[in-house]
Length: 568
Image (cartoon, rainbow, N blue to C red; front, top):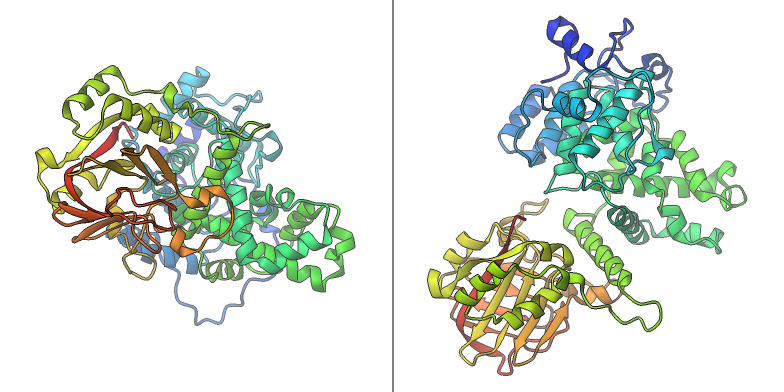
């Protein structure tokens, strides 16, 4: 329910949340905000009103567009409409934007307060400080303009979320985002928003583990090396002894701890719809702006910043020389920074970190995969033995040792087999396309057995890019090929072996349409099958650097089987 001013319902909500109504409300802000601080902010660079500006869009207009599934139109509106910092629209807009990412069943009324009672034994707000969960970064519990009561409410929300989501082990940005939400809504609504962001499957909003946190800042660094090459080269040149990593480890604090609040609020308008990629874009603009200032402003001369560039960046952000509108315009004008591109860099970085974590310090030999710790249950083994025409138990165990560790915690299930469901690509898509990941197994008429671990849904063949075009290839660097008979071998993505840009031909993971399926590309296709799932061919390809998976290259399919995983 949207946050309302006045009336019995809102008064009751305020009592429940431990918030006392303050007399000095500043239009769109919640009562637990110290509005006098916000009033004194310097809106120095806001564009002058000419009287010809189009009217700002309303909550109702955006709501209708979302209901019609016009997410791209909503994205453009959020980017272009500079609602004032004190606009009441956010009390309804932000909860609606966050709710669209919710993957759990809709929470019942009163769910949050039941959770509060479970955790604290009461819904009364304690006057004593609350111990925060271990995943919170105590040095970055940013309250912004919350009152002391507002800060206590933020502490409580984060505790309840930690109780409800035990998988969160490290999430330093969660507290600041909680604080920002509380500037415009009630405690219960802020919790619902966070639950939507944390539980999102389609987009990333909030990192929840140390691995994700590290992968994220390293992804920003890799993107910056390409898209802000001059700036990153400059910082390395003036600080030859400083590793670039030290600068980028704090990238999110340039935004969350550095930027003025009016900038931050406008960024959040877009972030709650589009996800973390908005922050990536803003970080790149900050780097470029700081680089320009370093070359023209003595305050940021090399001698003044070389000993602590990270702190200098945050100080620069506090008095950033552009308005929120200009900052966002520059961020969304960066070309070649698509969601697919960012996802590829992220997956590649994640896989590199994971592979390095299992190297011994001496011989650098890979330790045996921990996948063997989570073998399929005996019932799953029996089921596969009874149904499969491609896998023996021994081959299943071999395949299991090659899977990503997190996948081995789930049990395999046969989704499609030509023996039972017929030889039709249409039937294949109906039974398989919404599952992620999948194991595709081929047995040829010459008894060769090979296949692929496919990291993305086959439905993605229908997904369109920002220009409305269907993407030819999709998938991520977790995809790999394998051969089980006569040779036993795994062929991972070539990008795992180093962090060099290998080019487009090395990132052709999966492709499909109504006539064929392809896995792997670049000077050949690793696996290609026709629409009747009868004939196929296999070649070497650049994406996996594999040999042909059967000696003849061309093959006739005896059986095709596709496995999914229960519970994902």
